[in-house]
Amino acid sequence: MAHRILICDDAIFMRTMIADILTGAGYEVAGEAGSGLQAVERYKALKPDLVTMDIVMPDMGGIDAVKAIIALDPAARILMCSAMGQQQLVVEAIQSGAKDFVVKPFQPARVLEAVQRALGG
Amino acid sequence: MTDARRARYVALFAAEARSLLTSARRALSRWQEDPAQSDSAEEIFRALHTIKGMAASLEFNVAADLAHATETTLSDVRRGEQAATTPWLHEFEVALDRIAAECESAILEAGGEADANAALPSRPSRIVRVDVERLDALLGNLGSLVTARQELERRAAADTFSPIARAALQMSRRLDALQDRILDVRLAPLSEVFERIPPMVRDLGRSLGKDVTVDVTGDRLEVDRAILDQLAEPLLHLMRNAVDHGIELPDVRREAGKRPGGRITVSARQDGDAVIIEITDDGRGIDREVVARRARALGILAEDAVLSDDGLLSVLERPGFSTAAQVTDVSGRGVGLDVVVARMRDVGAALSLTTILGRGSVFSLKLPTRLGIVRALVTGIGEERYVMPLTHVIELVAWERDLVGQQDGRAVLFVRGDALPIVDLRRLLQYRGGDPPTRRPAVVFEANGQRVALLADAVHGQIEAVVQPIDRPAGLARWITGATVLDDGRPALLMDLASVV
Image 1 (cartoon, each protein chain N blue to C red):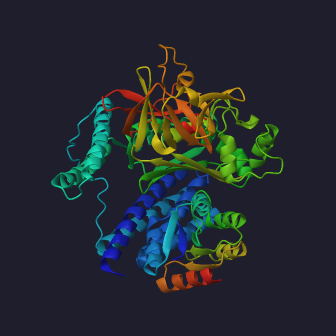
Image 2 (image 1 turned 45 degrees about the vertical axis):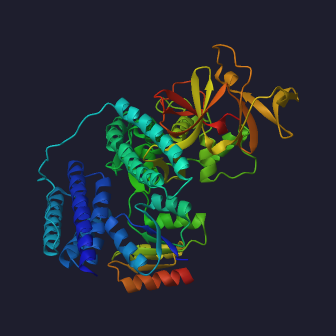
Image 3 (image 1 turned 60 degrees about the vertical axis):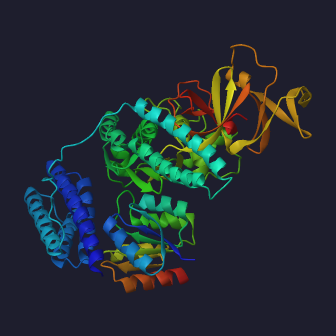
């Protein structure tokens, strides 16, 4: 069965692009979220195999969403998607339980490699 | 990347970047009015950050670099290394204009459409206004047509290859299409309810001394008129709750390290046949410890039980449940979520709650977009008709004097050796007109794992009922869940057997 992935980003553009990369490789998009709070809510409802998480989002940022999701499910697998200039936050995300990160602009091969690794580990 | 896919990305970029730049400019003018506040800087920062990521993804490098440089300048201000002086703000405004211009030229170069935002020619609208009662009458006809279809299909099934059977199949398909069209005509945009939200939030926020901004998206989605009418009140109730109980006072927020201004978003999206509306606030969240303490005090929660989000909602939605902190002038006196939830269930909606203490709450409503059609049994008391969905009905039992008896002081009906408790529809309705007939049929149904015999005066057959939600006057029995129109055009109430038990 295809792995189900939840995509969290406040830009529809980014969500579409990530969804295209993932579905092109045979993954299933379980759902999308446009803010950190929504991400937590969707995670609970959808129980996805993996979450891709933007960092800068309204309501509640990606870092806090990672903490909340890990608190709900310590086994949650989260992949951070950050733009340039967010290194410090990426480190914080990893310390909070995120598995890995990719940097925008996305290279499909790099994204898929990270997804595969996060799902395998 | 294929050309078609790239064109789609460019169109998405154009729409999103333009809308982000518009809100960034708006935030900047607020900032210019009051350079001391920091909310606007946050919002502009997020907009620039998102534009940078999108532009870089499309290799719009000049726009991406400009956005990155401007974001960096802004970061200096956010860190306090640079003051937001008037000249600086002016320069910043010029920088936003340059980013906008660069985005536009990149969009055009990539084959996207020019910004036609302000220049949309208004088409003459060809709209007919129709009284909703006429639409309801149309639904009544539709229901009886669907019932007639069933009879036709039943007869045609005797000889599947006959010309009649083929004609019946044809008619069936067209009837399905007609049904869709009729239900389509009844659709109305969510904006009719959503547009009432921002002024309400603004006024309420002001009167409570709170700074609240509200974002509404997805208001072009459509749901059935009857569902929309039922939605307005509970939705506004949830909004009042969010402003009143969710968003904190500016000082409290500042102390908690949050922006002084609170933010509520209302977003709707399509999910198959349903619409999901989410109300997100970045306020204090619901303190489940306080709720749990009160629930334990009332004896509705075990001493050692922990409240999950679902459990929290099921406690909060209990009629009359309120914590002391919940009782204020704005949201009523303990009458709250129970009413919202009851209303929502009436229209077939589901409600869920996610809350994080100190961070905020999300209420999610999942609404059907169209009215449902259910197979139902028509029963009568005197001249009145009551309709019950067949989902819970097991069988009909004809009246026999020997079948009725007493057990443990209760009237029971013996059905093949089992003693089923009897519920008399007359008593349930407190019906006072005329005497019951001597022979009364019983509808045996199962609800919540229990079989019950419901005594009616008569059973008038099955129909395909188009279920319409109804306005609930105070005191209406909770097992009345909707209304439908019978074949002969008469209205009838719909009973939820599960809540009769």
